[in-house]
Amino acid sequence: MSETLFVIAGEISGDAHGAGLLHELLQQFPHLSIAGAGGPQMKALAGPQLRDWVEDAAVMGIWEVLKHYRWFREQFRQLMEQAVAMQPKVLLLIDYPGFNLRFARALREKLPSTKIVYYISPQVWAWNRGRIPMMARVLDEMMCLFPFEEEIFRDAGLRTTFVGHPLVDELESARTTGERDELLVGLFPGSREREIHRLFPMMLDAAQCLRKQRPNLRFEAPAASSRLAQTMRRMVEREGLGTWVKVTDGGSHDLMQRACCGVIASGTATLEAAYFGLPYLLAYRVAWPTYLLGKMLVKIDFIGLVNILAKREVVRELIQSQARGSTVAAELTRFLDDPNQRAKLTETLQQTAALLGGLGAHQRAAGVVATWLRRD
Image (cartoon, rainbow, N blue to C red):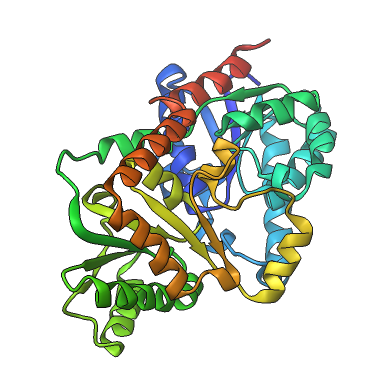
């Protein structure tokens, strides 16, 4: 079983993180035999025994999963057969908890000597802490991206290592040296179509409120894809705002370093903005049934990752009915009126982002896997 690794990642982000880890691991084990499932980046490193399935596997929502239930059941069966035939020394599971935790339980029964390591811990501390004892029984080690997760899993008896967030390496490479534009406000409505339709009109409403008071203000909104950029541009043109609201294809990291302040939908973008020190507020809305269900299931005080990381409200959160154009405009006005407040928040954001760990998360994660591969 020496130098054999079975790995599963089911989303685009997991493929990117998995590829970073595998790249580092192959420096230590050039002849490592790798099988499993992931995406194109992982397959390019691992070779033919790893299938590229992320385009089909990365479905979201309970309904979508149920519609594809037979397909997932067949993938589960095929991957389990492949793993049992390989008898890997280490099973590496990357995020994707709905599939991966079930796979871990099943493999533990079939191959009790295989070590099971999880990279990018599922956020069960937010929505289902009851799964943590099961994870402690099944997994051999958890690698987490946030420092507060380490204590949660260790207290349950699970060996846990805080490896830091790989986002730090990506963001550091995107750092620029220009100054901020006092008349530029960033609008970051998210990367999914549903978010764009639900949040971008509200952000445009806020922009119009601000523009009435400050005719020289300009606004910029980066789109996650060219298709979403077209959707956002149509919204801008429909409101007649095209002369002072610019939609770009990508460029969010650049904008986070040029704008004087901004409004951001919940998600990884909130961590990115904190890293670059952009003063911002969080605004988010979902369908009311989704929100009410989330309130019952999610047991945390904040939805913003920066506030969760800091364990306090560093950034103002406007959720559901609070996320209106007028309230967003009022919060942005506070930033525009007071450079000292912006500077103070920038400092606090960068201090919070420093908790993500330094450069080299993938190297540290690969080191954990390497330790298990070397064990007799």
